[in-house]
Image (cartoon, rainbow, N blue to C red; front, side, top):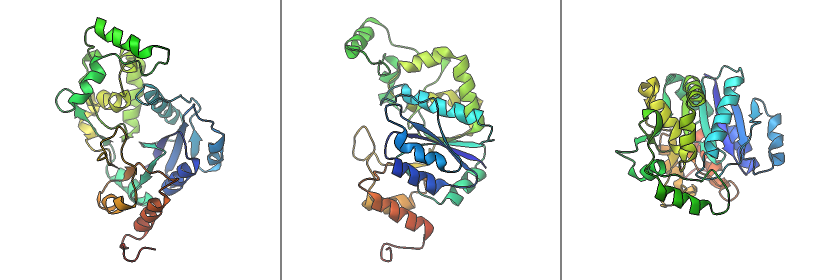
Length: 290
């Protein structure tokens, strides 16, 4: 089972290095997209590591914009063209970290070969808050003076948008672990359905909807597992998930997830150290941890 970890990063090169080192395996490959807004110079040292590749077609990524979809697609394309015979693509951010050993992660994906792990809900039935993302025009992917004035004017003068190609919209978290076959289907679908690309370029946070929707409306629906294998804590009630800290350790250990997000390496190195200790020595308890 060859796994390509596609990592979207924009900061913290040392944290990214630690993530790569923890996931290093003879059958693990790393494709790194560094936000084009950031100088790549501080990340160049990672290219010396085995099986690490930088995505050449970099994108300036903005929150909630199609640009993050494009960055992901560029990564998919690089992996598809690599000739490495990849079986599974695991999409991560630079602030993610594994909760299981590398051997356990590879064994899990081997045992679940052919399955596609992604979180999704039916927008019109279960995820109502996402309906305006699709019905209204959003100019998040564009930058010009008066953008929001123009956006509001467009939405006052137009009727609600309708999903193209009779697609049933589903989505939730953008982070996923899917097969190479599914990725090839996504790439071909987007190449041959430019109206879908145009639609999602005017959608708020399309990264949380577009890939799930494409696979849900295809023959891949039967292979979807409604679980992205990530521990993410939204309890703070903010637009971004909570930064995980030492007090979250036990929840992470018993979660049975493969990965978690998000971690702030510069201020919370301790929890990553403790995670590594627990994973390497699972019998340890808080009473005998170093």
